[in-house]
Image (cartoon, rainbow, N blue to C red; front, side, top):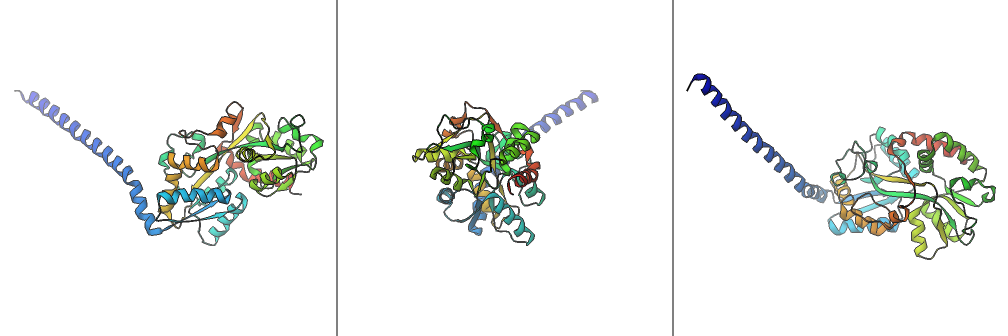
Length: 351
């Protein structure tokens, strides 16, 4: 065999061996990665057992949050759970004021779109991989990993059927400008998110014009969507201009005289959930985040709240109610205008 042939043979043998080694390395790496993912829950459980507690901040009704945390404890009974309930604006201000004082109480919290940018800038949101959300729509998860949507909220006009007949009820958002509704319609006082939702549908200029005209009807400013739904059902006012559709369907099942407007469009937004950057119980926080975004957690949350959830494996009665309607989803990109949206609402309505 010539020297050149020997060299070529040696090269072929070396290449084959390298391929085998690389292939084995790749498979070993894959197995290691799979093993790491399989051990993820065990690792978090070990850390969470040492921490012993989870603190959750939310604006959801107390009963809903209690039931959700009870489901979580059924799976992880070694954890105690606490929650603090407040409106989005109050919860956001508490986050900021405590951070300035170097105090960190929350592990996991929900927020609203208009507060996302400020929370990111203040470095109060932890970057997380959210492994259970890989198949979700990009609308429902932050591309940088700082938040995911816990649920989706369709927002509609609602009215009390005892006070307003179907014939005279508004048919869309612009019908709320009719002077006949002056002093008889209400809206949550913290409706910056609603401004963003209308902004997504119409653009800023048209929204500002609309809100200025709407202010001439002297809307009654309420405090909290849950309270708004209860007061509407009790007849405290005729119409609510910004109501979560899940509340209407829930109250209808209980016999409340409520109906909602099939407007063009129906507005929708995600409710962002995040892990606090300085969570006092970080392993418990990640364990809760992983559980709530799993099929089990999402199904459990839907069963409790009857809200649309982003997990594609959960069927939703609420989603079925709007599937034939035009729905405008508010993109997270509009969150950069959150402070501006709040300011617009306050300057027009907080007189």
